[in-house]
Structure formats: structure tokens, C-alpha cells
Length: 287
Image 1: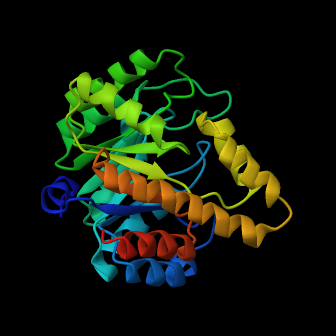
Image 2: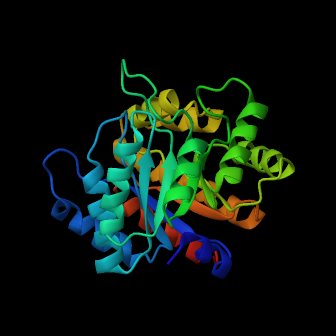
């Protein structure tokens, strides 16, 4: 099933992001995680390619294949481009096609240290290339607070529109911790003519080091309520995880009630308990 068709049939699709096993680990190491995630019945699952330019693209393709064939859940394979040639992207595409996957998420990706831009500079260029050379349903990334490397928010919105014009059919947002940020972003994006579905990306807080890393990598701002929560439970990981999941549930329910988000995309960090908690909160509220 194409992801674009899910938005036509569901009022508020709920999806997860997971990452593939790293190094020599095989997909069987994720079997228990997949079993639990599938039990919550998400509308689709996206599988990352790599972080910081590392990782195993073949594991991404293979994992999306398992999700679709064995669990019957539409899967989206991430494809990055900034460190790649067209030939590299073509090989990745063949791996994904070989798994019978119909949906990809096109991203610029993280630059490898010391690397130079090759055949693709921006995500919009990868979107255009994939739409011209494949029959994938192609999604793109968006950044409610602007991309960390872009100092002009209006320019960032123009880049978003460029991705749509290049053929992006849906967008999954970068994480954020304050819904007002997302509402402002949606208002600007729609005013700029972005009509494609835009999902709100939510990452529950799971630990202080995770938050520090994500804020540095993504440029996400932390509201005072989050800072107080992290400081309060800094030395109590179990309580911090619970508080973080509850905070994310509050964000998700507010977004669901607002109607501003086309869907909710939960960054699970491969933790089924996170997916279960957030999906349970939505269902308890009647979504």
C-alpha cells in the first residue's frame, strides 16, 4: 500500500520510526521488538538508514521487507543522499525494490566528517530523482523549528515547498517539545502552498543524555517544563522515562484534538513500551 493512500482512508494515521540492527547484528535481534510493535497496530513504520552517515543500508531494506511481508504493516525505507553518488542511490533503490517496498523517505542526511557533497546537495534533489526514476511513493522531512543548518525560517519553508514541487507526497516532521512550535510551522507551511500531509514527529524523553544529543543534533528547543522534569528525575531513570512518556502523550493528545497534524509519527527508539504507552493514551481518548 502506498502511504499516500493511508492519508486518504485514515483521519489521523499513527506511525512509528525504528532503526535497523547495527554492525553484524541481524534482524532476528529485533524480532521481539517487532512482535510488540505490531501488536499496537500502527498505520505504518519507517526504518532509518543511518545516523551521522554510518549504518547499514541493506539492513534498512531487509527490515522494511520483514515488516511488510511478515507483519502486514506498510513500511517506509529511509534513503539519504548527501554522501552518495547517483550510483549509490541506485544500488540502495534496487535493494529496496528487491524487498517489495513501495514507500521511501527521502532525506539529505548527515554529512560524514570531512566529506564533500557529491551528486545531491538538498533533499529536494533526491525527491526529484526518485520520482523521475522509480514508482515509489516518496516522503520528505520537515523541520518545525527550521533545519539546524538554516538560519532563515522563511527560507526553510521555501525548501519545504521545493520538496513538494519536486514530488514529495507526505512529510514527517523533526521532533519538537512544544506544540506551539508545530502550530506556527503548519500555519507558515500552508500559507506557502504546502498541501501535502504533514505528520507531527514526537520523541518521548527517555534520558538526559538522549535529550542533550537530540537537541544538539536537531536544534530542538526545550521548554521550561521539560528542563524542570529532566532535572527532577536526572538520577531516577525509571521515573524520567515515565514522566517523559506522559509529557509526550500530552503533546500527542493536544495535536490530535487540534486537527493541525495530518498524523502522528512516534520516534520509538526501538522501545515497544513507548509505542504501547502513547498508542494506549490515544485510544483511551477515543482516537
